[in-house]
Amino acid sequence: MHYTRFKLNEFVIKSQRILKVTQQNSHVKAAVDQYGYAEERIAEGQYLYDALSDAMERQLRIEGSKVACVAEKSARQELVARLYMKYLKIARIVFEADEEAQVALVLKGPRERVYEKWFYQVSIFCNNLLATPDFVTQMNVFGVEMKHVEVLKEELSQLQLLSEKCTRLVAEVRKVVNERQRKTILWQAWLSDYIKIVRIAVQDSDQVNQEWIRQLLSKGE
Image 1 (cartoon, rainbow, N blue to C red):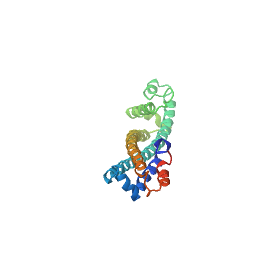
Image 2: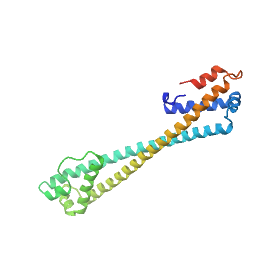
Image 3: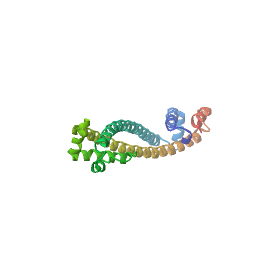
Image 4: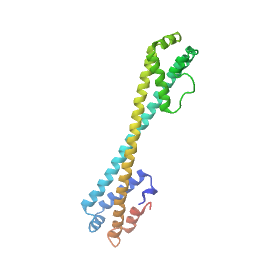
């Protein structure tokens, strides 16, 4: 059975069925037992299959968490961006003639698009406003108070925590994918040998339906 011809889930289902069905047939089971596939060796194959299934389940679970994290991060980043741009526009009006404030709050130029650079821009804006109460006092005329800047700063902090969480989940996904690939190779190698032995063991058997065994083992090859 060639794994490359199937999607992973399909391969796992089909390969597990081969092991289960051949072991449920007493004649096949007795035949392969004579070729070294006694209960202990079959148990080894079952262990490899279970390990692969476990890795696949963990991959799905972690990938789901990653997708949820990215969605949450995106939503929070949109919120932070809206608040930031509102206060930024006000700051540009208030400090139109104040070169020092323009530099301190990075008011000139385009906004960064890459997340890390954009986050740095917003952080400078928040931190320097919080560190310079006089800036905020001047913005009071347009309704911006220190509490508003503090809310923006807290949202920004929560966004960064989400970003770090997403990064960890990406690394976990990569790790479990590598693990799943290794376990797929191990299970495929075991199964490939087992299928070859089943064919040899029952080829001259009058008790095993040769057409049935051919269809079971050869489907998809």
